[in-house]
Image (cartoon, rainbow, N blue to C red; front, side, top):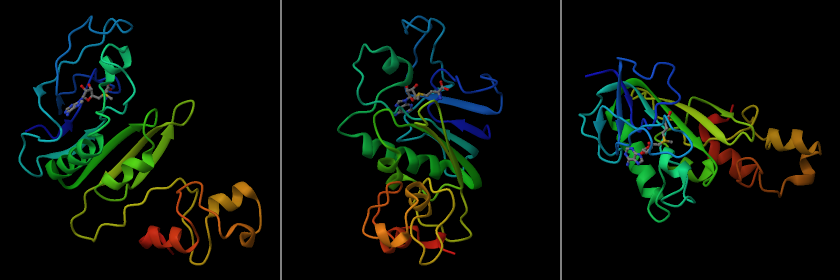
Length: 218
Ligand SMILES: C[S@@+](CC[C@H](N)C(=O)[O-])C[C@H]1O[C@@H](n2cnc3c(N)ncnc32)[C@H](O)[C@@H]1O
């Protein structure tokens, strides 16, 4: 078995070496060159055609799993973006993404790494967070509008998993200290906005926001 799984490889565009021999490329379809009107050379030619919701691999098969699922709900069947990147079903996307994460985690070995890429064109990251297998280790926003997000998860079955809660705060909150990010942004005394909802992680704080972050307190 190869050590790396790209669970929805599409056109393999983000690979430096799209024929990397260490990787198994999976997608649920084959689409040959010419299927996309605007990207003449785009094709989807996986090593294995399979569904990320039901992967045909034993538990703990891979050291690295890459999960870049479709993220668009608003493109029609003929839309070129949909042809290249696939579409999410508006009604079932939550179940589909949840099942995808579950499978990625299942086939990932202990001390393995899961890389997840998401684009917020249709759905916000915070709506996907509930399906995360654990809290990401590190992550980063990219793109002109910072709408593309990369998250890295580490599978650790030795220590208890940290609470799942991702946020974009520049540094973790400290006990009794409300949202650092909002305080910096608004540049106002803490007492003036104690009742507000944290505009980054959308929990009201400080109590709720800190509680949700659980282990992140220091
Ligand atoms: C965002 S694209 C991946 C782009 C790719 N990472 C690249 O670098 O070009 C998502 C891919 O997931 C595939 N896909 C959609 N549903 C799937 C499923 N249930 N199982 C496996 N692949 C799926 C789509 O066919 C599409 O090629």
